[in-house]
Length: 160
Ligand code: FES
Ligand code: FES
Image (cartoon, rainbow, N blue to C red):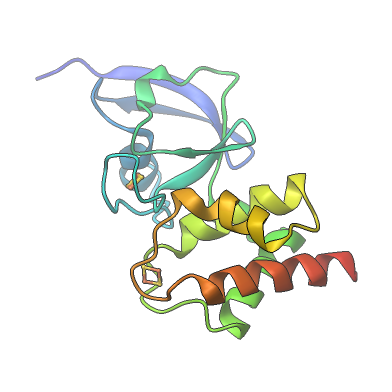
């Protein structure tokens, strides 16, 4: 049996510890050890964005990051950690009202990437939305409704 590695880091604002295999990814760890299942494994190769979480404020593909590489200063935020966040709520409502959700598999990653976009740019234009979401693949919706949802969420937040 491989040796387990003990890691300490922040998860959704709480300091946590986990014992992980050296080969375990952050995605596997948050899903298995912490039962946070919003982030999904689509490709497992950094191509689809379904596994997107925020690491130290930046969206990352958690399927590519080894859990054992986390340090005490690292902060991971998942969709579950933003359930009371007004921007994330606006994004989620807009995805629903614009019909941007079908099977839902890509949506946690889409909303995390959108969240980061609206944090850094509260009024993105169409090109900026497309560019921000270029690493997130959706096999159902055809993207137009997703882009409309991000635009709507940005308007909702700016009108508050
Ligand atoms: S599962 Fe991580 S990028 Fe596809
Ligand atoms: S809603 Fe099905 S993959 Fe995007």
